[in-house]
Image 1 (cartoon, rainbow over the protein chains, first blue to last red):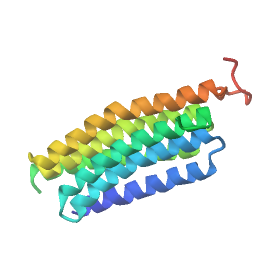
Image 2 (image 1 turned 60 degrees about the vertical axis):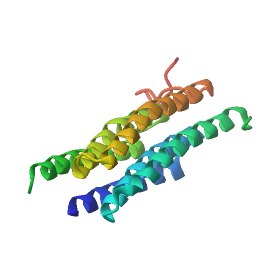
Image 3 (image 1 turned 180 degrees about the vertical axis):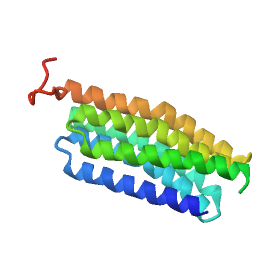
Length: 86
Length: 106
């Protein structure tokens, strides 16, 4: 259990660094890259959260978040390239 | 401590190291294409190690099967999205950083 708390702390620190890069990022592509990596960290953190609470069923939520993260990254890229979504 | 706990602890520790160093790389590297490199590493090696550590901690059950599915989907999807971001930036005319301070000729 203590190991899981340590992993959660490390993931939170990594996510904070990525948020700083997304806030600073000179170009829009830096921001998209940081948010994509942040989404991956979030998937790991949700999966870990189930283990922390003793209810590992939360991995379903992590699976759905992984799907949404991929689609949202591609949608934002398409919007940046075309300046519209369709 | 039992053997699975030790194995999962080692895997989780290595995954934390990779995740932290890659986030530091994304924060500190000088331009977009170099930042792409640690981001891709955290998206493959870091998540593989952490998900493997969680699966070992869960044991052989439905939870570890779902963790395996998450790993499979992330391994398929994150190279696609990283490639899409790099291609979009290249088409937009961004050039890689070079040591002389200016931008490299393509």
